[in-house]
Each structure stands twice: as structure tokens, then as C-alpha cells.
Length: 117
Image (cartoon, rainbow, N blue to C red; front, side):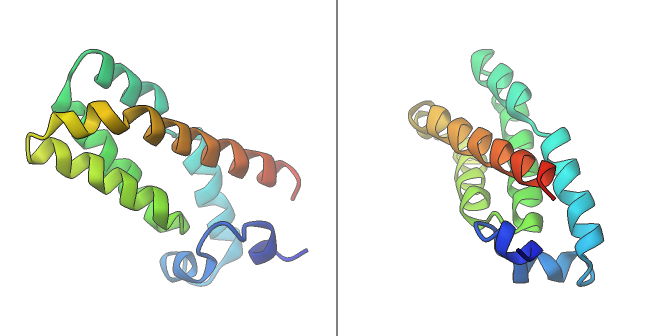
């Protein structure tokens, strides 16, 4: 199975643009993505209603997710980031759990697939 096939749930071609077409670099970025994930920080910011911190972390998830080709999660994070920017906290309250679940599921799946390389 090729690297592209193993990570078929990610936009491999888009990610390759960020990593100079190198699967070795892509693998390092995927490893960093799962080890530097922001789940706890996002949950803490949500619990403490620290919306500025939440916005910053959502922005980070947006950018790193786009880099690895996780376009759907990147768009979801963008929605959360802009909800804070637009002072529409109700969107955060309504979608935080789903956002975190999707993020956690992606991190877990990448972690699993990296172990089997």
C-alpha cells in the first residue's frame, strides 16, 4: 500500500505542495501534528471561556490541518476561529463538542496509520 493510499482520507496532493513533494517530510509533519495536537488547550479554553485563546488555538488547528491535507477539519477550525472574531460565541457553544470529536478522531486515525508504516 502506498503512502497516498494509506492516508487516503487526507488530501495528499495538496499536502505535497507544502512539503516539497517529500513523503519523508510529510511523515515528520504528520508525526508533529499528532504529538502537538491542541485538544487539551482547546477544551481548557472552552471551559474557562477564554475566547481569545480559543481563537488562537483554532487558528493553529486550521493552519496545521490544511498543511497535512485535512481540509474538512481545517474548514471547521476556520469556522470556530471566525466565530470568536465575530463575537458569535453561540456557534462555539453549539459546535465545540463536534469539532473536538472530529479533531480527536483525525489525530487518533493518523496516529494509528503512522504506527503501521
